[in-house]
Amino acid sequence: MQTIPSFQKDHDKLQKGLYAMTDANGITTFDLRFKTPNAGDYITPKALHTIEHLLATVLRNGRCGDKIVYFGPMGCRTGFYLLTVQLSREEVLALLKESIPAALAMDTVPGSTRKECGNYLEHDPEGAKKELAAYLTVLEAL
Image (cartoon, rainbow, N blue to C red; front, side, top):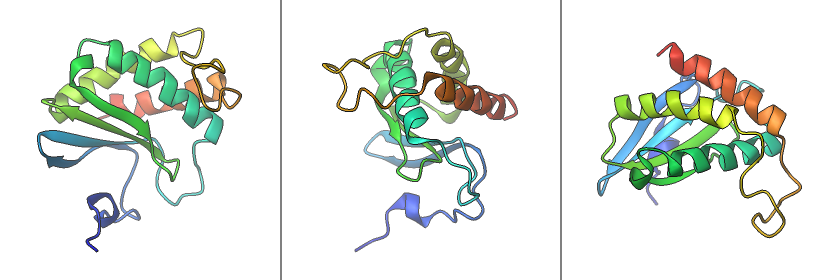
């Protein structure tokens, strides 16, 4: 079997940031790297789940919502994948810089009731907002 593109990256060299990972069939996969890989600091499962709910909601309801294919967590808990169509890295960077503050301003976690979520008890809004604010600082430096 071929090694998939995300496993071809040297994770000992990756740092926090935003990376365009692949461009196939018109879909670009962005690596939103919140944490330095293999550094022992990971997003907690509850915060990861909450970030997914917050940022996915903001992105899909935002000005580029029709160009968002998917937003979800990495299994290693160091960040998220954002799949888009027809958006450059610069456009995604700008979109994240406006979407993260909107997510930070949310008072409730969208889609977090038992009816809406398969693990509705596993959320951490405070932890999620801490991680989002830290990542926004990373993006501002790019």
